[in-house]
Image (cartoon, rainbow, N blue to C red; front, side, top):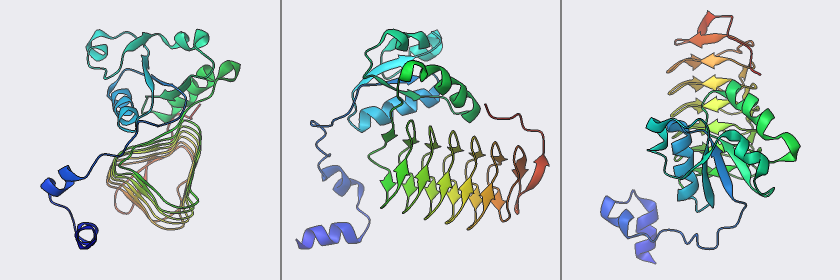
Length: 241
């Protein structure tokens, strides 16, 4: 028991971490998944699915030879492969752009087919958090408590979302960004790598918050903000689908 207390009360060395048994995922339940996309974003999602022990059938999308050769799962065909697939198969969208995810979701979800969701075993999800269909958490992502994610929200590596925050459909939180408590992130918004949104802030739909920016006041829809503190750089960002 003393060894266990020491292990959890301080950072483990590399050697100690290597000795911790991997979780037993032999009994992982859930429907079979496919990833729509063949880019690096899709490859990461396929890797997360494999790490989490989910049954991953493969990837769908344009047959680009340079990408297909690097897929960690079989290439199954074009997106219309879903039309004749078993109804129990669920889809994840391996595309980083929220507006494109919205368009793909509309097409893939025809005939009532449902999206899956995915949480890396190295992510942390606190109490009373909810994830919409299609949402994905990368390794190191943290949702503290009472966080709500909409449909197809992607939370990147090391991104953190604090209490009572709502992230609307198709939003994207890129690696290392920080969303403080009681915030609202609009539909299709993107919070770029390393950006910070302080407490009680509302980010409008389809906003792009630039890398490393610090948002200290509410942001209207369809703009690009950059800097510390963040200021509007452009006010004509194309609308999300």
